[in-house]
Length: 537
Image (cartoon, rainbow, N blue to C red; front, side):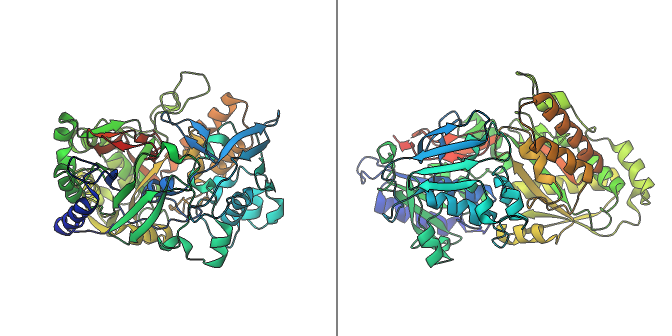
């Protein structure tokens, strides 16, 4: 889950000009064009769905692409590019039947071959997708990605232009949901092969969703318009979406309250949250995510597990959620958040697993730090928290900096980087502690557990544990026995929290700004946002 600063004046001028040219969402005396103005946060790192890993990318991708399934207003998978499917009795083979006459936004025919091409190139070892594990559900998906199988061995095949056959490694009850995730989106093979940089410019960016990109002014804005070639264009009520790429949340809030934005996916300044909730400008909802600090376990002093635990225990999470975030977040005393069903219907995975450590346990923290050879913080090397540029991350980092100073006697530096630079630093391990977040990709705790296996491309901690990997792999190889699956994941989570390569801070709630005249935007508990049926009244 995933900034260049743009001054309020320049953004205001840009959007004011847009309003004069296109009308204020179809208001009286203006153009009848239905325009939604929103703020997405950071500049997307990429708009190739095979490479994307973050929320800023995912929000845009879901408007300009669509998978075999999409999601309805309840967040459930429903037919998208596929009009129907068949599932074998053993749950291992899916046959998807594409809708007739599907087209890419440039008018080219879209076929099952485009899905096969996209999935296989994402898995190819040379492509380097950080989300390759997301397609390990496919037969031989992991083997191909690791170089021990060929592309032809992967369990996806276009039988004809409208029929896609998919074979899985094991029955996966949530596989239909996975096909609505961007890693499973198709890409236009003809366009991709002709231009490797097809996804970096609106002029060459070809999609298959309800909207298409017509302008991408990098670090500034993305303009989308209704895609006349979308199969379900009749439900699309908006003519245009103007997406601001500013992550300066004060600027975004000012624009929203000055009626220059209709919605914003950017968290407003934390000091404004209580007022905005009271005025019903800030909307909240379930959000299955963990706000945490990623630890590079190879960098001293955090190569010592006792130091990692000491720092984890010396955070007052209750104070953070009650005095800083203030929107109903919960202190995170484990890895997987609330919202996942455990072995028995009605039981929550988090409640069954319970807490793995105490919040603000200063006495134990000081003892562990002393045992590690740093009594009262003496002798510790310089320590720095890295965060991606945003006021909310800064406020939290400053609060934790003060807590560690007060509770452990440790002086901690904080530093920020723009989104793409921050992602690169975290990916290459050029950090000690890095602000991070993980939002579930599907409704099973496995979406959190497999993220921290030793070979997962989204594990930036440099941590690995053979028993943890074995337990997660055990879960990956079964599907029907929920009691065994959940026990293995609880056991894996205990190993993770005992080793503490991550410092959980709080469990999210979904927060977004929305004007009362905006209707029909879909927000689900996994962070998906769809403007497909949105309108301005």
